[in-house]
Image 1 (cartoon, rainbow, N blue to C red):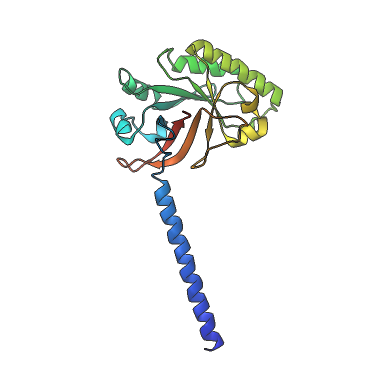
Image 2: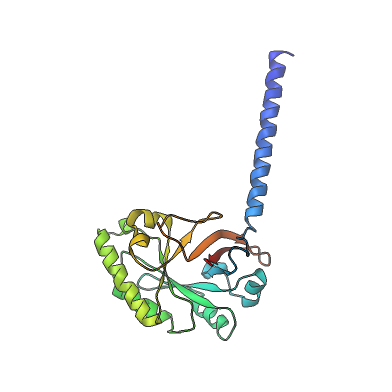
Amino acid sequence: MGRSAKTRWRGRIAAALLLLVIIAGAWAWWVALDWRPAREEFPLQGVLLGAEDGPLDANALRSLGAEFVYLEASHGGAGRDARFAASLEALQGGTLPHGVVHAYDPCIPADRQAANFVTIVPRDAGQLPPAIALDKLASSCGDAVTEASLESELTTFINQVENHMGQPVVLKIEPEFEAQYGIGARVERNLWLSRDFLQPDYAGRPWALWTANSHLRDGLTGTSLRWVVVQP
């Protein structure tokens, strides 16, 4: 076999191997879209919903296997989720437990954020513990915000939310935020951590809630959902 023929065969083999890799990757991603942690290990599972997920259908969520739902409610000092009021109304009087999430903004004083939260979220002892999403870094603020100031303001916000809701908050901390500030290791509240498919361990202590698949396929609508499980 001549050199040119060998080169052609090597090219064909390389192309075939590349095709196999692409097919395997596509198959793995397709399987991952339907992945949820085993019920035997994590019996209580649910979803996190926001405006981008469309109208809330409690029956559809239950048929998908959701046993609770968290709703994105407010963010910063004036932001509110466009579908929060309608979603909350759809859950009233139902059997699907629900809680709310506020996206904390380190650039905005705690008092303004608390005022926004209590205006939007009604006091309801029957709700799940409220969650504070910690994702945005203080380095993005126009004025410098020190770590000490961030923790102080966050503590103020936590206290005001807990006074309004009558129960402790859950800290929903993203990996980059925790790596920067170590809040999860210092503030004694239950943790909600995120990592697709693998249990997260970046906060230095056990989590209470885990966003286990941020792209779970909803077989009814074809959209993706953020699937959350509770530590048993």
